[in-house]
Length: 383
Image (tube, rainbow, N blue to C red; front, side, top):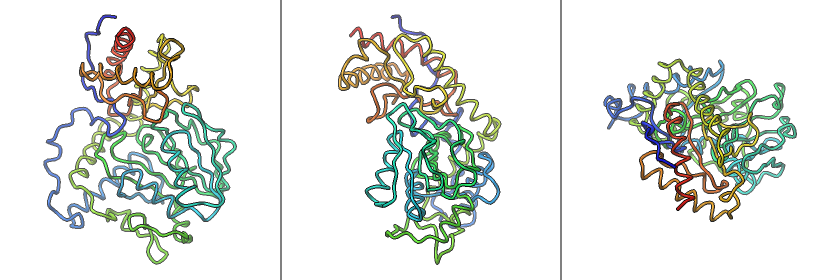
């Protein structure tokens, strides 16, 4: 197959950290409050600005708290689990690597006695109708490693007794979240908006705050997870007073990303850009002789972590180590040509490709990438 002539303008299609917003340069960081205490008035105001801009873009309901947490989305979600779980039975929904991690935390670290697991193989969702929202529920809204997303919230009762705790790290800013059916939601800066690592966000509903103030977990709480003091919510966390020291360089970068998001039309525009990326891949897959979506049901296909597998054929018939070797050789060709970086499937997922389609990725770059995938597949198979 002849090599394509048009290359993506930006080859960064990895799933995290993801590419910066269009037009980004180091110059946007020139006013960062470096060498200053994050507790001083001006730096603290920048932290509060991240919170307020995020709240506005995501259309967070009145009464919800939003704060900046340490440890990226992982730290934020583990803080939720460690502080809120144990008050009632818990259902954990796991259909990707990160969901499996939360299940492990619930089972082996917190050792929840009343625990039910709802699991599915990569590419599928478990039966959400079997999840009992009279109990607490933990899940990832979008499977970053599996390319599967929860299509809607119809299975969550509006009059539920339990809390719904959601890891939304690769969903926030690219998908419209059903806030009225959720109670604690976390995400990180380095996903949809292309921010820097190690900073997480935590959004709490009034019901979640009530749980925090009424429930004392039976296990020790690390300082980084403590959201209450003397039985009351630490309100400062949700006003820019972070639990530990944040990077003011990363804060300035996140403000730039949020400003860009507002400038293009906010959440609707961000969602539309991500969906356009998925649509371009879907049109190509429909005509492909070798590629298929890992997510079998169209309604569950992620628009951010777009995961592809091999169709029936000589490559698909190979064993997993041989398929992984093929993926390695194929992605090495793409990287050598400066066409695509970091698009091999997640290490625990079935062999294939994972293309980030978040809002900072230009649909034109996705369209330019696809012929190169055909070229790399053909060249690797012929080698």
